[in-house]
Length: 299
Image 1 (cartoon, rainbow, N blue to C red):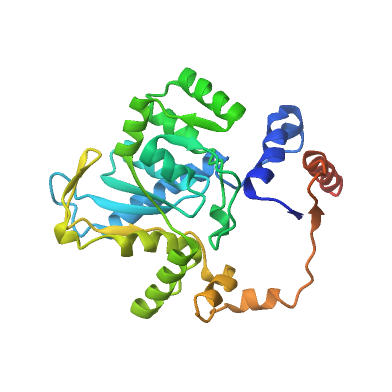
Image 2: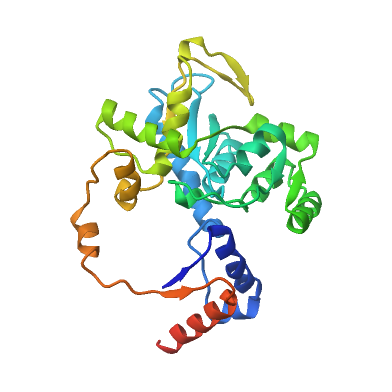
């Protein structure tokens, strides 16, 4: 287990380097559990169908009813799965909700896919990402699988960390997704309101989606065109909850809520903490290689 003094984007750099070393990756059977691994997105596609069937009172209608699904978005893997499910014909409207690291929100709203000055530390820490690599997958889908265009755009972004989406591609993106951003204050308020009204504890990432729900006007007043579906006043809304609140006790306490810890989590507090620290300025890729080689020798 390694711990790094850095953010998620910085940690992705050496991991990508190791996967790019095909011989090394094959020799040591490297695998990632995050959304850089296509299999994770493939599994998440099924979540959208399950959520749709849970939220739909009846399938005996033509056309099928629409369900709005609100997705906390960091690296963009989950929302990519939603885009694929939609492309497969599932009648869903997708909303990508981000924290203060809002590159996805800016891309949807303005076609501005560019980095801010730095990653902002937020209560929804797993979403503190400035380079959501799955956006490339979404844009590829929307471009009609134009790999040459994607190569050009992503190489430009890699060089200057700033990209203005082509007008047609931005139009398709904004037709496919709605977006919203939530500050830490918004997150805290959503956690508090959900507990007060429903007696349900939200993790800060789930609260980002709940913030979008609470910020919407009365549905009876809504009727607007969105993607190829009409946004109907009767359309159910599903907010995805990606993590347990037990993992984010500090956020719960900041919201004035009492953490409810399962015994398995409580037991961890009495155990020894063990990890190898990667400091800034250190060659993280080389450190990872050495750790992997050492682990392989034990088998």
